[in-house]
Amino acid sequence: MGMSLSTAALSVSASQPEPDPERLAERLMQNETGGVREQLAWWSPHEPFPSLGIGHFIWIPAGVSVPFEAQFPQWVRFAVEHGERVPRWLQAERAPWSSREAFYADPRRAQLLDWLERTRSLQARFVMTRFQTRWRQACAAQPDCAVLDQRVKTLWQQPGGAYALLDYVNFKGLGDNAKARYAGQGWGLIQVLRAMPSDRVSVPAFVAAAHKVLQRRIAHAPRDESRWWPGWKKRLDRYVEEAE
Image (cartoon, rainbow, N blue to C red; front, side, top):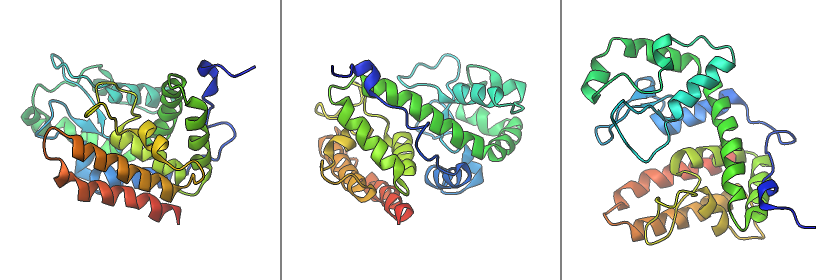
């Protein structure tokens, strides 16, 4: 009897080696902040919300409606559950700032930076846990879940593979959001896994597939995204360096 899609996605935690949280935190921080402490608490001038921590977890202010999931409150709950002391004002569902200017002017930002820097390893554990949960859910909805999940498991076992998977999802998403499409084509982890050759599941093959998927995104984008390619490529190529 075949396995149902609801149970086909396997956990990558129980029997698979777990990446070192310290090393993972270091690599994620390098990719998201350039290693700059100040950017652990960052608000882009092009976004209506701040991005916080090594995973740039977004915290959405009251009155702001965006088609994104607010990861920061999830991270805070994870920290509390793991015995971390969290300043009470950070435990709200909505960010307390109404604007980017208010965010940078708030003296509490110094406390936020200190807390985010001190909890980097736990943030890395949160990124891993969140990936495992979200991957099982996303994969179960795919008709080729068994193939996709086997590729995830194979990559996870390889040097640098877990880092590549975790960072790519942090970078471009799982690929299960039907709204994140150009010309009907997505660019998340699912699309990259599908673009890999079936006979070569490795970190270099993953990176080559990601190059192809993101170049397709650029080709189909309604505006010019080619200016982002050098930075995207540099980030992807770090996965191969980590695997060597």
